Length: 257
Ligand SMILES: Nc1ncnc2c1ncn2[C@@H]1O[C@H](COP(=O)(O)OP(=O)(O)OP(=O)(O)O)[C@@H](O)[C@H]1O
Image (cartoon, rainbow, N blue to C red; front, side, top):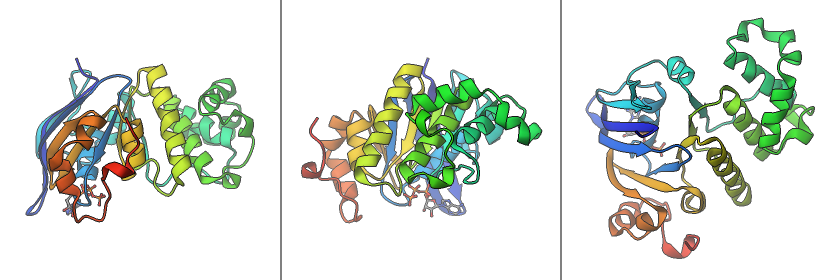
């Protein structure tokens, strides 16, 4: 049984068929990149998995359980974490306090709020920070961190409720090329260690082709191709789909296999 099974999901907005009968699966420990030109249906697909949107038809299964159309909080409770295009941390709190807040939420104690967070599961928070190599900066304010470090804190926060599946919406947006690859290498290592699946949308081809185990390509709402980075980079239909979009998908720009 797959960790995530997406079966023929579709979504229209008025007359716009944003996603049309898209299917794919994701296994534990695997990184699957969802790519495609602007308006291809990536965010819509992503939001149907996370519960922000309900599909018009089709279904989403998590470990065989039908989660189609459940609200985001219920899907999160079932083990689906999420990070956002713009990192969601509290700038006024320290790094460790941010992770402690995430642990309070995971423990259903969020309404205890401050000052409980300061003492809540400090060791666990430090262990999560050490997984993202941020332990040494635990007591710094989040507002003092470089953006790449904020993204790592956000990753530690997403791990606080021990997700089986992590949804990452353009995780490397706004980051420098070296930082992008480092963040996704770290994510990849954590995913393998925890046997956590990762579904991510991404525009940076160095990240997609260097880090994803598999790549799914959406074009105008349909799944055009799905396979290993090698298969996708050699697929003439994918090359064609990217022509004229302003996005680069050329062999000389991609890392060697
Ligand atoms: N809430 C909405 N109302 C109306 N149309 C929408 C809505 N959300 C998305 N669409 C349309 O659905 C199509 C798919 O959009 P979507 O945002 O899923 O694409 P995307 O691949 O994520 O694009 P991008 O890379 O630009 O973020 C587009 O034509 C978009 O205009």
